Length: 308
Ligand code: 13P
Ligand code: SF4
Image (cartoon, rainbow, N blue to C red; front, side, top):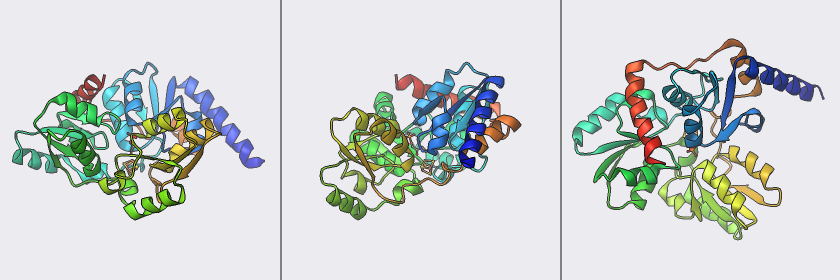
């Protein structure tokens, strides 16, 4: 009873403060349910980036991980962009740095650099174009390049390479620890247990796991696919946060998580307390040096243009 009262008091205060600060609150689909429920928009990396780029409010509170809030700041430089949990980083984004990427570019001067949005501003600044899991195939196709460097996610890169075999793809050796650790035999077993369920998997999983998929897509695409489908049972091959909207919006359907380890600890750091604290203190504010931001913005804008 008390916990519920505290929660409602916090939500009321967040609602009061978002008006006072002229703030919009956005949340990635991997956030905890309570945080998703107070957001003005819940979406995948692409939907959130696009929404922030066109934002009219003065402040964006980004409930997600640091590269997402940083991308929002690059796309909306005159807005105040806040990340409620300073320590919410992405281990995959940390697997590549600008110097390493410059070295690889020097080895392949004829390749275009395609970088996953899960990367730092400095790495984006070294890139020709940015992609997300929902638009990577479309954007790479639209580039019409013969050869690309794909960083940092080797699994998403391999998925793109498979869809567009005419492009030579040099893969960076990065991965998402949450998705990459899922083993093909775990997936085969869960399919055996639920033979009548469709298997929807995120392309950050390994190619050996993706071969079992009935559908491969970003978090938003997985949610849309399951919601529109006439099928009644689904095995979900991405971070468990997506179960919140799936179960809420599809009470007549059953969802099983592909593996119990599908949890991103960094996405789970943000709570209602952190959102409220962030609105009250203005901490942590994202800032990107303008020389880096200008180059990164060019690569992000190209993504927005090519994914139309
Ligand atoms: P999407 O938001 O593109 O589905 O990617 C998932 C992810 O891992 C974000 O960090
Ligand atoms: Fe990074 Fe993976 Fe977490 Fe996404 S799910 S933020 S890629 S660690």
